[in-house]
Each structure stands twice: as C-alpha cells, then as structure tokens.
Length: 311
Image (cartoon, rainbow, N blue to C red; front, top):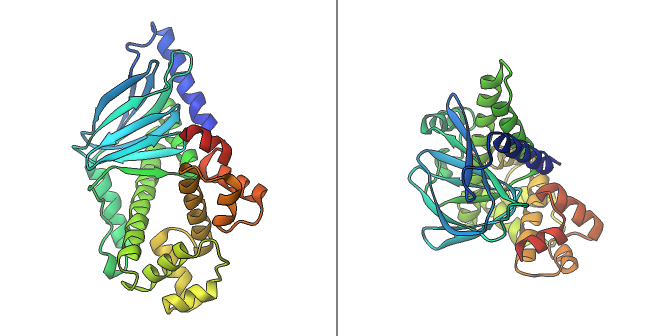
C-alpha cells in the first residue's frame, strides 16, 4: 500500500540524516526540499512532547506518515492526526501539536508541503472556468474558516508518494511532474472542501437545490438500499443529467459517493467506540469481510487497527 511507501521514504530520509551526523533535534527534526512553487518538509519527532507550535506562512498541506499527533487549533479545534489523514492550514493559521507516542526507535513522521497562494488561485480559476459550480453554491474558492482535516483515499496517498519522489529524484522532468502533482493535490483539496460545504448546506437547508436534497437523503439513509432512480426523482433530474451534475460537483459518481459516505460514517462510529459488527450493519453492509476490505482500501488500515490507533 502507498502508506508503506511513504513510511519507506521517511526512513530513507532519516538514514540520510544519520549519515550527516544524526538529527539536529529530537522534536520536529526538519529536512527541507525545495523546488519551483512548492517546498517539502519531512518532520521526524523522536521523543514525546506537548504543545509544539506550527505556523503556516503559505498554504500548508500536511500528510501523516507514521505515529500519532494531537492537533489543537482555534475555535476549540482538537483532533487526533493519524496515517492516511491530511490537514490543511491557511496562511497565518497556527496549531499546537502533541506527540504522545514518539520514541527514538519509533518516531512520529509527517510531511508538510508549502504551496504558494498564487498556485491556489491558479487552480481555483481553472476550476471556475472549466467546472463551475451551480450558481446556488457560488464559485470554487478556498475556505479559511478553520483547519481542514480530511481522511484521504488510497489514490491521494499514491499522489503524495509521487510528489515526495519528485522532490527526492534528480530527474530532469522533476519540476513538471511536481507541478502536475501539486495541481492535482490542490484540486482534490478544493473538491473536498466543496463537498464538505455541500454537506453543510444539505444539513442546514436541503431544499437549496436538487443535489443538496439528494445529499441529505443519502446521509439519512446510509443503512438502506439506495436506488439511483429514486435519487433522480428526489433531484428532479433525468438519469443522465443527474450523473453529470453529481460528478461535476462531487468529483465522483453517486454510487462511489454513497460508498465513501458509508465508510466515513463507519469511521465516525468506530471512533466513538461502536463495535465493528454493529457498525458494519449500521452503514448498510451485509458482509463483515466485505466491509473490512472496503474500509482498508479507503483508509489503509482495517477497522480493528483503526480502533486501536484511536485509543
């Protein structure tokens, strides 16, 4: 899995550090790689620590590699940060980080990708020109009201591996590959924010448009069999228009989205201590083995491993 590939890249980076005389510091030891328009930092922490401050001068996309962090931000934001997860900080944002489990033998590692605001504006402009949102939802635009904490898919994990490899390699096409990778990562981030915004709208006012009604209905009926024709009726759209509009706004087809939401709800329930078998049925799966396999594909760990990480 890509999660293991990132772990191996971090280990390779630590070996280079040791050859150069060992880590400069035990907490958030930083190795920096620079290229045009972006900067990659790999952080390794070798000892438990509390309230370590992190400031974002530009957009900061952070991906967890190994271990566990606990993030503390404004507006009472507190969250455990685990592998297969990302958080994004807006320019000027600050968080404090705890490292409860870091040791010299088993360090906590993460990557941080600093991206210029000009690059983000460029991607927003491209989306607004080529894939505009329905007028009720406004334009593609980053929302800076809080830290964005996401649980990403294996595809995003593979993308992070490619970006890290672009920084580490000496290939003559490195900058081109890196630029494409950062553009894709920002697009995924904006789509995630847009999806979160649509979910918020669906909870506040599901009658805003046809898609918000569908999204609200899906969320209220994850344990049920959801038929596409039924969703088309709720959206007041033909089947072809529904598929087109749904993919356009959500970045995936309705069937894929339903599976993602079921797994997201399962993750929430498992995080609250719900049993694995009970969670499986609560989110609409009828086979425990199928549920466990899909959960691992989405989050890189089995439901049981996820529960142990949250403890």
